[in-house]
Length: 93
Image (cartoon, rainbow, N blue to C red; front, side, top):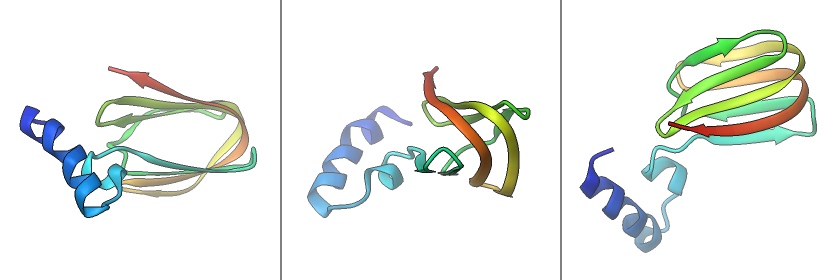
């Protein structure tokens, strides 16, 4: 993101009460127990196996580890992962 956007986006988010994930292009991660992970606003699949999922984001990677992974839904900016979720980690660039 450009420098002026990095400075002004948080101000706009606060002033207009806009969601920060939308204004700052951050991923939104919804976890349901240890069974499902729904990720929005990602930039592509980097790694996928039955024990690991790694997605590219604007600021780095989101890594999910566990077992028995199945991609239930995959859209250009959304993924629904099912399996046994053990850990969700953000890896900065």
